Amino acid sequence: MKEFIKKEPVLTAAILLAALSVFIVKPSAAYIDYIDFGVLILLFCLMLVVGGLQSIGMFEFLAGYMLKFIKNDRQLYSMMVSLCFFTSMLITNDVALITFIPFTILLLLNLKKRDKLISLIVLETVAANLGSMLTPIGNPQNLYIYTISEMSIAKFVKVMLPITVISYVLLLIVIWIITRNNKKIETNMEIHKVSDKKRLLLYAVLFLLCIGAVLHLLNYAVLLWIVLAAVFLSDKNLVMKADYSLLFTFTAFFIFIGNIQHMELVRSSIQGIIKGNTILFAVLSSQVISNVPSAMLLSGFTNNYSELLLGLNIGGLGTLIASMASLISYRYYVNIQHSDTKRYIGVFTLTNVFFLVALLTAVPIVR
Image (cartoon, rainbow, N blue to C red):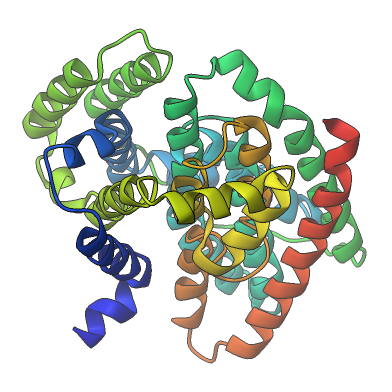
């Protein structure tokens, strides 16, 4: 039990909250209506498809190929940070980090640039969290808000584009500053080839079908059956590797939030607090319980989805748990021999606070 709580703190909290709310609101058939199966199906299908692309080495090939054009530290930082920033828009922030952080560690150790590990990993983590905010499929909270708000893809991108552009410009400025001693490098790493081109084509088609479902061109149930059938025929192990803890976390929060909305006193209190302060409240909430649970909690008390999106995505910066994707990078770093955990947390916090304050300051300008 201790190990489970340590490994899945957010899921544990979600289950406890759902269980406690059951004692207040009596279980009934209405519980089924709490659960947004469309969100769960889309998340599950994207996990399987992106997992398939990852299993055949698609992203390692992309990174390795781009390394051929790297000549110095500044180009190295720019390329790796940009990879995390732009790929996270399509493969989600956590998958971008799972793919590129181990590659970064291997690359820097190979180049004997151990001193660059913390700064580059932290910037890649910030980049993945910020790049992912542009699209509905970039991260779980975006997909959830996009689905329940019935917002058009054009409106979604319009809301998030200005702050995303500012984020990328800030990243480039920070890279330019920290690589002022721009040393030349030579990369001799072998480029990994995609292991199975037939499966690459299959996963590419499935990914397009997922996008079709996001754009409401394909029914969620139809998408699920197509993806499951294709995955079982190509690589059934992908089903075992899906992030079920995230799916169960969503389900538990659906139940908790559904019950909370039936508690008049609690509902009116939260609505009173959040009214007129949606962005700030979303940012503060994310620092404590992370932005995915915050999305599910706060969406039940406001219809201002544009501000909620901005607050939740900016709120992914700050503390180590503000975005659960940030923990992925942290776990990879601490497993390196002779890692400096205190220094990592210090650099991570200072960098995140800088971006958090800068983007919050920019919000009134871009709205």
